[in-house]
Length: 125
Image (cartoon, rainbow, N blue to C red; front, side, top):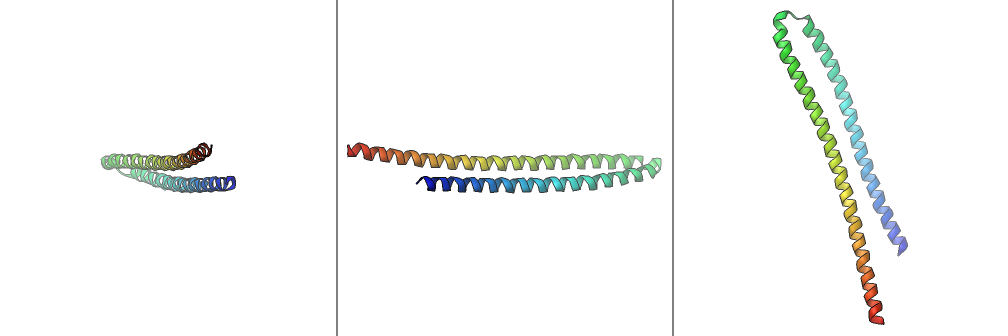
């Protein structure tokens, strides 16, 4: 009985660790993608700056608009990264909630079983 309980606990713990490993893996992928995006964005921005500096004064207005557009893109990408992090945190919290709910169910079963044994003992007396 104790071995089965230990086996069940280890099995749940194993599932939990696998879920955490999955989350960590997805977070690493998200960070790598973000880093690649930032590097490409920096390269693009440097090229844009070189191009804008080479243009005439008449193109200053276009340059200003492009700068605003670039700033907006960067802000959006930052928002997307924060959103992905929030989703990962939410998923981790959901997994923790499921784990705790499982523990609650298991404890409820234990209490119910103990009550039944106690009733049986009382009846036997």
